[in-house]
Length: 101
Image (cartoon, rainbow, N blue to C red):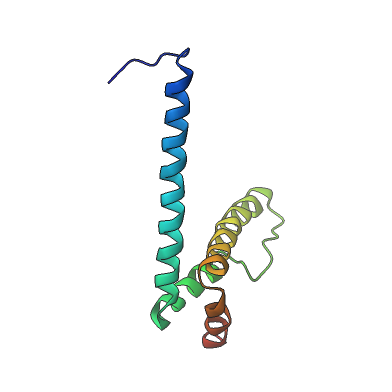
């Protein structure tokens, strides 16, 4: 492994490009995984359970500030999952909702 040279701008740009490509591949794989998960009734139940545990569909208010902060953190992860569902399999979201009513 070569030592880091802060003046080697070409190497830094190449490293940034390689990292961007790895990030893009990871994002595509995550969308594919969610699409696969939403493709079965069992998978949709798993996603619904995670969204419910994250309290995406209810308030996160608590009179205790730290508890509310924790609830909001959980909710943000739920929103991230919900965003992935809408990006990967938007046509299956209404199916999932109907199956869990």
